[in-house]
Length: 80
Image (cartoon, rainbow, N blue to C red):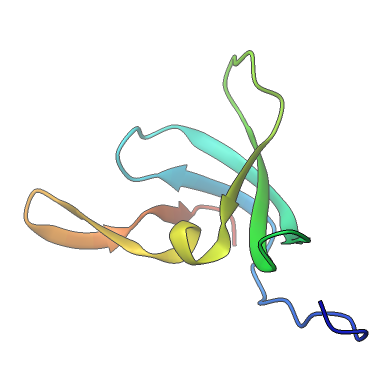
């Protein structure tokens, strides 16, 4: 990794809904994976879960998925 800090993409914290499961999550922010050198989204489930936090590559978090023949965001922001 270079000596300077990485530039991370912007993702507005708040509540998001997963397109396939319909479950809600609170996005806490974007972090930097030091080994893979990629931005990761840190988020937590807003439902009863044994897992306290999740991380997912930023590019995967913001990509579109196909549901019923339509491309929709994998995670849709609910709070404005």
